[in-house]
Length: 113
Image 1 (cartoon, rainbow, N blue to C red):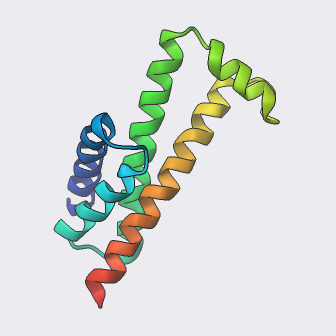
Image 2 (cartoon, rainbow, N blue to C red; image 1 turned 120 degrees about the vertical axis):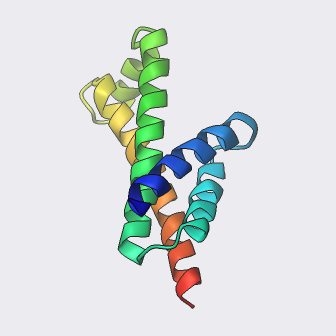
Image 3 (tube, rainbow, N blue to C red; image 1 turned 30 degrees about the vertical axis):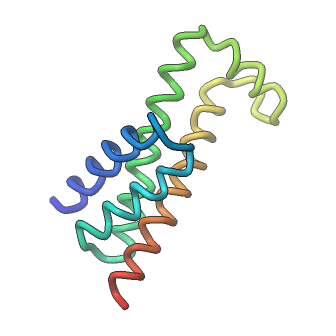
């Protein structure tokens, strides 16, 4: 239950912070969420990764649908992704998830010490 609550809190805080702050504010949101909801280190990483992954995948997909896959298709051609807009959305979400997971793991370590 704490894990689901932490993921939802990370999604909410990351979205709100992303409206007004730079992209790396997702790390601050993940860090604060795990400080507020104590959990083991691996669960903290999983919560941070999952929350930001879901948020960024959804937002990237929404933007991609609005511009009819034009930008993501061109970006995917630059990288070795075979022109797949779905692959660029997954790569974007994965990178955001790593940032969120690392910040949440840092908060978990800080809470332990």
